Amino acid sequence: MKKLFPLLSALSLLPLLVWAADPLRDTSGVLDNDSFLGSFLHALTGDEAVPSRIQVVSHTTTLILILAGMRLFRIRPPSPATDRKEIQ
Image 1: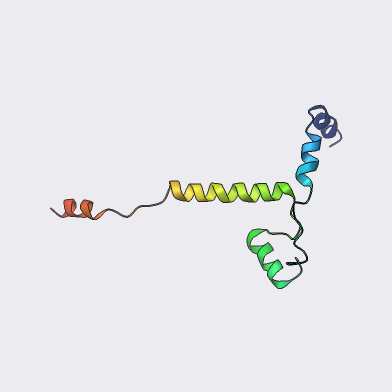
Image 2: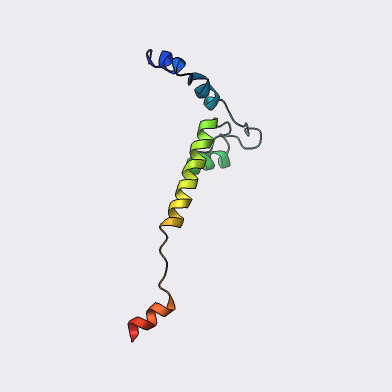
């Protein structure tokens, strides 16, 4: 770990990592992690009352990739015209 920080500083990536680790929003006043619904959402989706920017980016990217994969690989039922050709 001691070698990582000078490398990141040299590459000017340290400010980006600090920015990504900052909290994006604070919904603990509306939906606390210790409440039943907050605990349920955390277990179901990994939601937190104070997520960092990188968490929101990774959750959004994952959701987009899942939806794109579902759309790309969906199974289409055979069309009625195809069924008639097989019968004849």
